[in-house]
Image (cartoon, rainbow, N blue to C red):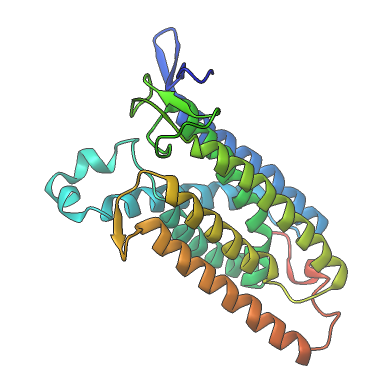
Length: 273
């Protein structure tokens, strides 16, 4: 792919046509699976990573789609079925909400603390999001930014949502930031395990970092403004940051009162399914 907009929204293999966005979403789930499995193993937790990724990934896609459609309820209810099954339009915050609900249910199923399950899923979610953004880039689905004269600006004349202007390749920005967030969360997770501290820190930090990253990138994205000049994604990002900070503050306060050394052996509370 070059800066002149040579993109591959679809791959044709004989009579079969595959969307590159869908292929990258599948790749993102696969990468997230390997990360999640590695996290379970380093925590000595006997949980089926395939089931967790499969169920959570499906719920995340459904949630992302529904959230995007309900952002424009009049258009959706006027013609719901074609829009519901379209492959265009997914909202990040919808996947966060749906994934959170499913992970809570899975934590109860496997009899592990909810925050521990969310801690394990956070690095996988960060890296999976980044890989999925590459799908947005190579398909040219409109997730790019405003026009720019910077040397790395790109045009997408052959994309699903075409533009001949040089614009910010925001999916690349988000991919690079997602890699950095993944690395930070992975390191914090290792420190948490070694220090045998209460779970929740990785998840809280995930909400804060991803919320800040999404809030900032929206300033150069093409999404419409709604709340006080902010986009819907920015409003959702603020909510994520506030929730994440609340979790971190709560854990900081309770860590002063609770004895350390009780949460570093998750295997005792995670029987094999």
